[in-house]
Image (cartoon, rainbow, N blue to C red):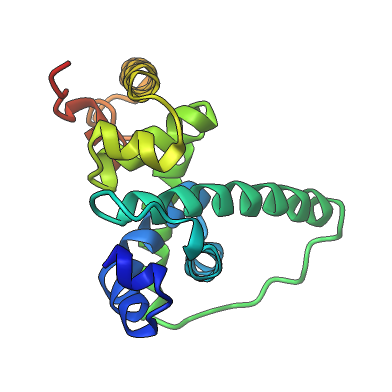
Length: 204
C-alpha cells in the first residue's frame, strides 16, 4: 500500500480513505468536540496526506499512525481557530431563541451531551497528554504507533499516558466526593473518558 501511494496511485489512496476515514473522523471528534470541525479535520487530513505522499517512509507498518499524526496537527489548528471564533461570538449579543420541536433531535442532543462530558474531562488534561490518551485508548494505537504519529520517543508516550491516567483518576475521585446523594459515584464524568483508567499497560 505504501509503495502504491508513493507512486501516486489514486485507487490505492481511495482504498486508504475507505479503510481509515472513520477512524480519523472519530479521532478528530474527540480532540475537537465538534461534529463539523471533525469533518473538516478529516478532509484536511486526507488532502494533506495526498499532497505530502512523497514524504511517506516507504518502509513501515500500518498507515493509520501516519494519518493520525497529520490529523493531530490539523486538530490543533482547528482548536485554535475555534477558540478565536468563540471569543468573538462571546462579545456579540445573543441571538433570539428559536424553538425546535423535532423529536428526531433528541438522540442528537443526547450524543452531544455525552460528547460534552468527555470533552470536559479531557479538557482537564494538557494537550499533549490528551492526544496520547485518545491515540492509545480510543484509536487503538500501541505505544510505538502513537510515538510515530506524534513524532516523539516511545518513552514520552508512556510518560504522557501515565500522567493523563493519573489526572483522570484524581478527577474521578473528586467528582465522586462531590456527588449528590442518590447519584452514582462518578456519574458526572462520562464512562468513555474514564475507560482510559483501565487501558492495558504494555510491557516495557
